Image (tube, rainbow, N blue to C red; front, side):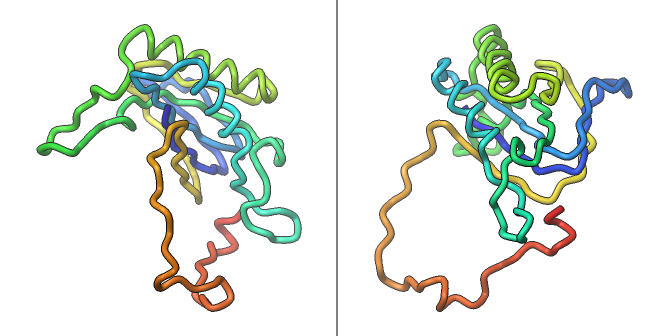
Length: 177
């Protein structure tokens, strides 16, 4: 399972100008179910979404609070295209995405699990397999996976400590809200 999380001031989804769901401050979740996903991946992803530290704390420390910590809202949107493979040619291949009923069932279980782990009324949903338009105001976008690729071990060649690296990037204060 793969998801893109966007920290938002607000977000909404519409179909043919009809408002389907909307949230205030919180996280917009684009979620995709892979062909080999099971309930285990669904439960893991639901927990990750709610625990991901995307907001600063009161002291200004970055990446300290989750959507639960800020009592924000969650808007889930199905997005199978996240699992596109573009390794060959110029046409995306979607064979890595779960199809039909399996995708719908696991996506619905994902939304239900997020609601169970948080507050049901703070978790909203789009319409599965619908062509939705989204409106959002955001500052941070993160990708999370339940089965990420293995990262090779780092070598000590060319590494420096945080104290040696004076160019740490900080988001502008207006984007930290």
